[in-house]
Length: 338
Image 1: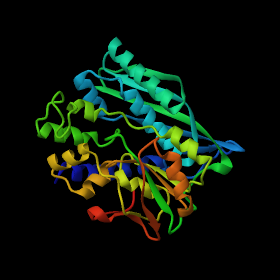
Image 2: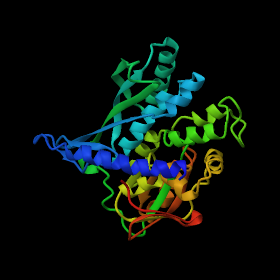
Image 3: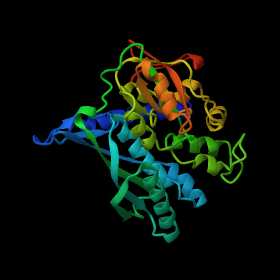
Image 4: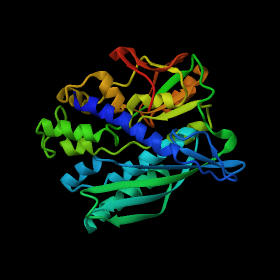
């Protein structure tokens, strides 16, 4: 069994764990009801004419790469990105964030670098960081954990649910900056098994290995909010943990990825070094696609023109009746989401 196969099994177990946890959450207020269901990219609370969205997420074991080279200044960008990129999938504008840092020691230089990254991420996403919590837990935390929560706002009649997605719609992809902040348990094992020093050049790249691995997650907030006033977006998906299976979270349809982004060198090399296949890679990593939109075919030209020069963008494919994600170029077929 390969590491990714083990990771997929663990992801299923994670899904079962989460579902069991959620089933215990039976109490709900009657005055501020949630919209939609648990399991989407963001949680939505009905506030009358508008709704507020809540997200919380973290950077995961990418922090262990940062710790190994004592470079923490991009982790805050990652943390902001992981939250705001989920929030915008329903058309919400992220407005504020609180952070949570769990550390095993107090280190002023680490604090400075982490704060710098959060500040840069906040500027990129146009949000305020209004508070947070730092816990020093040497008996619990061996390394560091970087996470946060974001609140956003959306007019209730403008919430994007994916319900209007239909056969014949077009799938638009926005390019990723690299690994983003997912799959790092697998990444670290591949690097370790191949005895690659983080200070050495990454295979096939002039950058050092740690620089490639710590490339911050791309933030899509400004681009998405800009085009929402120009076109009608039917559905959006953030390609994070679970890889391309995230696309099925918009609506249960068949998503045909006829022309995917060419995966960056980091994915190609990890695939080779880890002895992985394309199905495994697309189920764990973003493979060059960080965010997905579904629109009417008639709006394709407007979307491409609006995003040109701002972010890598291309038509990935189309929607059909059915279920799952098909990537014919790589003979990949993904079914369902946990």
